Length: 230
Length: 95
Image (tube, rainbow over all chains, first blue to last red; front, side, top):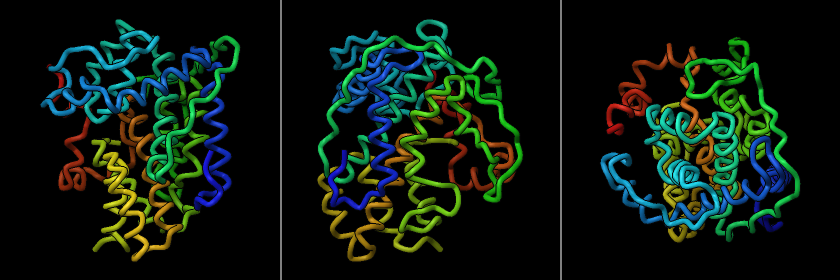
């Protein structure tokens, strides 16, 4: 997936290859072909006129229209993916509630978020390293498994999350922070995303050539640009 | 007080997240006057990861972890982070 000469760890290379292939496999609520279409849709969002107009508006919710996307996915799912890809900092609870009541089951929503955000990591790294985007994975046959975590709990997030003890680790966050719990309604969504994410970052003793402080600086800068509260 | 190589780290991050790919190509080269090539790569490794995980947080509406919520109240106000709170976003963006 990455040329040998790039200074990327073997762990990261393996993780991205694994996640990329997994996107092409059936998930718990979508087929491999549908998951690949989500990635294609996320890529199309970056050149979408409606998304650009919304990005410039005081509120994205004041601009109606149709996305530049000939996707086979439903219009609601295209809108969800485009918003998450191009303007995640302005998603709101009211918007989410509207999606869930009218368009999506929470479990489906979580799987979409996992696939799209996993692809964002991999696509961003490719582009940041000056590489063309990776070819879309091949769709593997099979039907969605339909498995989910029936014991997920309400902690004030928009979706039920993994239940976890609140004990703190040495870095001051819980041993299982809310971000790790956030997609716990669909365990395969957690696995997909964190397989790709884990080689990139650690809360302490980071195994990169930059210091923990430098990594936190970069992380905080990204969070600020994306207007992420967490 | 800041972090070592703060300026090239900020420039690399901003270009990566704003999708300024031509500028990023230049920055990857110029940043190596201050940092090793491995450090430039690793900064972009972290940036790309957070470009994904911030979207997970924002799309699932997860609250701050309790200890963080209790200990960062003043800092969130001073830095403007509180503006990103979900309730405040709703006040700004919901029609």
